[in-house]
Length: 143
Image: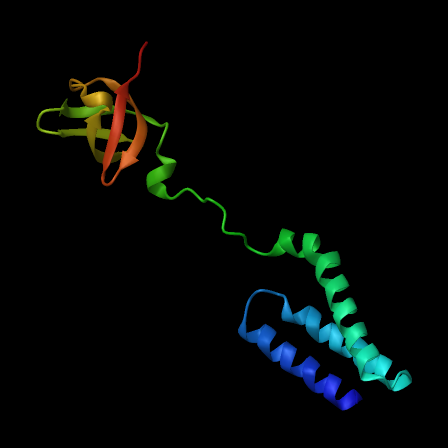
């Protein structure tokens, strides 16, 4: 029976290489533990129980350790959204009627509209409140 557990361990390792979840690795280790137990225990039900229990213990025991090193999909701000909260200056009047205007923030020129459809004259210092599409929604900085 040890050969079957060795084959199961190999299959789990191949699946682990194909996937990136770091889950089948523990099933492979559990199969190796079941393989070692099959040398001493000849009952397939007990061997399978050892496989299931050891795999489960390994998964839950190592999960906190593994989650530290696996790249999580956290909210990483892109260049656009990292600009929220930055200040700049109006380089072309922001007109709410025509929804036009330009601002300069960190050397970059943005199309902008005023927060709550407010008009903001050229030369006014502004703060980016949010981004909608390709336009920055800005408000004047009160001094």
